[in-house]
Every structure is written in C-alpha cells, then in structure tokens.
Length: 162
Image 1 (cartoon, rainbow, N blue to C red):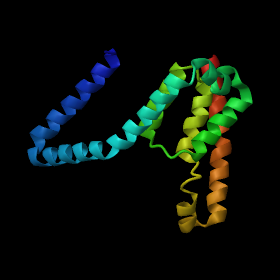
Image 2 (cartoon, rainbow, N blue to C red):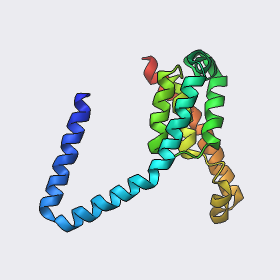
Image 3 (spheres, helix red, strand yellow):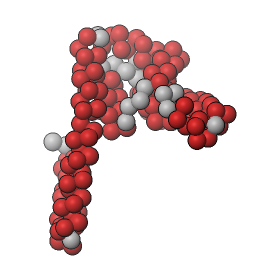
Image 4 (cartoon, rainbow, N blue to C red):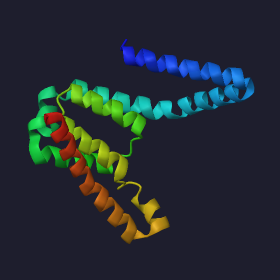
C-alpha cells in the first residue's frame, strides 16, 4: 500500500478516536449516517465501475488512445468534453473512472476536460436549473463552463508538459 494512503488512514482513524473520546453518541450517529450514505451511493458506483470494466475489456487500449489519447488533439478534447457534458456521474465515481481511462491510453489533458465538463456543465440537469434561474442564465453558465473546461485542459497539458 502507498505510504500516503497509510498516512491518510492513520489521520482518519486518529480523528475518529478523538471524536469518539469527545462524544461517543454523536460519533456513533455519524458513523451510522456514513454507513447509510455508503450504501446509498454503492449501486451507482458499482454500475459505473461495471461499465468502465466493460469498456476497458471490450474497447482496445489502442482505440481509447486514438479517440481520447494524448495525440488525439482537438478531436479528443471535443469527444471528452461532450461525453462529460451529457453524462451525469458523481465526482466520487468520475475520478476513479478517469484514472481507469488514463491507465488504458487516455490523455491527461483530455481527462481534465472530461472531469471539468462533468462537474461544471449540466446538459441533463439544465431543465431543473432553468426552472430556478431561467434559460438565459442556465445556457450562459453552461456555455461559460464548457469553454472554461478547455482552458482547464490546456493548463493541465502545459503543467504536465513541463
């Protein structure tokens, strides 16, 4: 196991022990809520992991590299951004999924664009957002977020390149 992971586990366990020593009842309540939350998100997480496993097994690494790999250029950015914009995946699932894609030939900048659009652009949630803020504000915010995701991808590319 990675040393940084062990350190994080140690910090979490230490904080949990401190919390438990301060107030056992509240700590138990929080642990029960955390356990319930874990089971609420588990089906979505397992579904995405299953889909990603399917993608990794049935789509060759070479194909992933061609379409969203480092050398895919603007087309790779575009594909990643469109998939991110129309997909509704929570962040705790998106980051492991991006790591799986990276391990199978996807480019870092393309994954930065994918994660950015996934977190900031809401094509699926646009009607709900528009019901609160109106279509003009919703479309404006989504367009700004969409174009900003390309800036994020470019900055990540520049930083990784150095």
